[in-house]
Length: 253
Image (cartoon, rainbow, N blue to C red; front, side):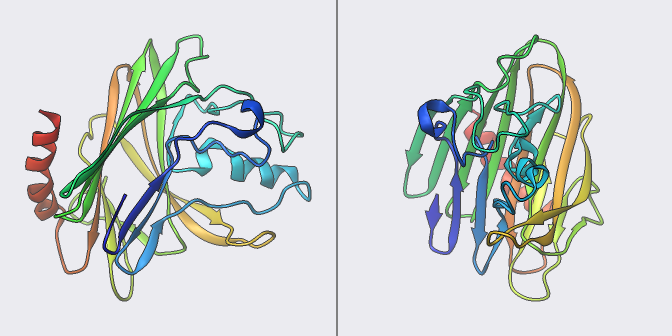
């Protein structure tokens, strides 16, 4: 999804090597986001492989990508000692891909959690409002039973803090240029924390960077709806909600 200096890319490709990968990571429905003058949401990359298998497994894990983890499980199971092989669990499917002058819409899902005793399907819709310059991400979790859901956002090495007026919202605190506000619109039962994490821009190097994690325990069906709103001037969460809510209502209808 691209318009002027706004850019988002999402992953909905199958595993390589006949479904078992080689350098494949658990990144189904994950994404990266650049807005105006900097990268905000990033893929953490890969720090090392066989030099330390624990780091290799961390960086290829589902929790190290911008997607949903169910019950602490991986999208694709893997043997921690075999860094170049994963199970063929998460098969992605693109339901819709729409490109219009005023908006783009991605709608996809994967089967990675359908192997659970009480199976779950993760479906993600990403709506890009080109005129307003923001994204709405809807994560739909359907299936059977009660589960723990964790929604991750991996930031570039930037300062990220809770919003003063809405504790579940977070935003970057950049010294200049654009900031990014992350605002959940479905908040019942949701908690949030900001964790210490890492990104690797080249092999063997790493830099500390924040991870924002939204968590809830819920019966399916349930969902997360999250607004990603680039901010170039002082704008409150309430002002953003007023801009986004009519758009959300129109696309939900």
